[in-house]
Image (tube, rainbow, N blue to C red; front, side, top):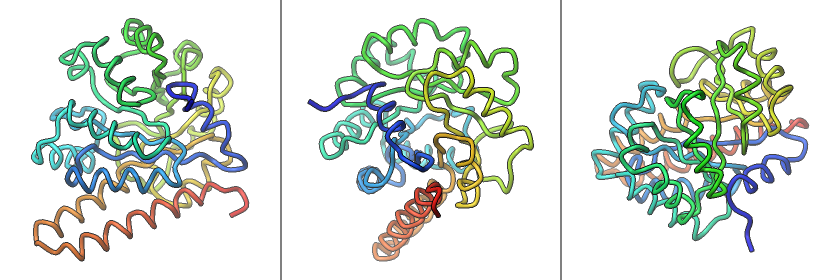
Amino acid sequence: MTTRGKVAILRSLQNRGDRVAFIPFVSAGDPNEEYSYQLIVELAQFSDVIEIGIPYSDPLADGPVIQAGSLRALKGGMSFPKALALIARVRAVTDVPIIVFTYVNPVLQFGIEELMKACNEVGADGLIIPDLPYEESAEVRGIADQYGLAFIPLLALTSHDRIKKIASSATGFAYCVSSLGVTGERSAFSDELEQFVLAVKEESPVPVAVGFGVSRPEHIRTLSAYADAVIVGSALVRRCADIDQALLQHDSELAKQIFNDLIAFARTLSLAGTHAV
């Protein structure tokens, strides 16, 4: 029997060996449903966990690149139920742990318990809800726990005195936001990032990941000195936009080439976290 839920996430991150774990983010249905499915399945071959964003029209934590990816998916007809069906389709062919990345309003519209039950049924292993303040998350955390799902909290450089209570409640992993603001590729990180991540690691019972702005192999090599995992989103979603443009031009060969280049780039990022590299 395959282990699922928060246990599966924890086991995958703890079994990463001498390297920082790799967690890619993609939006369900971007650039279209079939490419999205193929992308997740390919990424699963060398990823430790995968984050799947549920397209949403008001994604407050996301920068312009990921917002554009959500809009592409929504225009293609992606919805929360369809995203869950996509996850079920992925789960049928891979055991990689899957995190659902969504927002408060869609959760409330779906129904908290109904969503947790659905996530469990399709084979998702955890959730991230970036606009849900920790102090208001007790109900969601409790129901997620009932269904064996990880509830992954976000911690920011400004969390300060809240680090202990937020990090100590983390299941699956704790998510450190590398810099202030929304998601997006960055050239460098805050000088405070290492001390911040180390402070979170002191309080967290689970591995600690760094996301927001991680987009280059050199970023990952630097972060591998003190983080357990890295999360890469915009650098991958930006390439989905290029696939979409090729498809709009009816150039399926170019779209396939960009897809293959995206996978090769992601694989390079995953290998960058190997300490021997």
